[in-house]
Length: 113
Image (cartoon, rainbow, N blue to C red; front, side, top):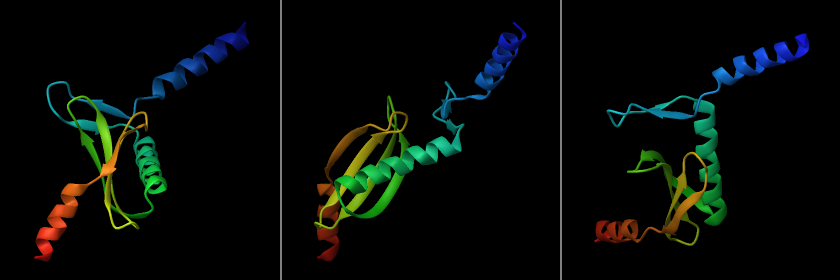
């Protein structure tokens, strides 16, 4: 019985120390990163996934809040000469969007002229 009590206390104590990676002030758009390691691991995983899909160089990796999600947006300049935009859900790591960024290509063409 004493062993169960001690295990219960340990589980409760450690359970209280676990916080979600992100929290948000309900009255503002401020996002607080509670777990920096988890945030960095999730961002690196999104960058890794982006590079697996489109080998090349990372141009930008950005953390953003959309209307309903927290996301990582990764821009890749592919070895194929195309610019790619990969968006991952910051919490689940799932790829939400993976498409050629034609807008960047048009801007680059305008700057050459």
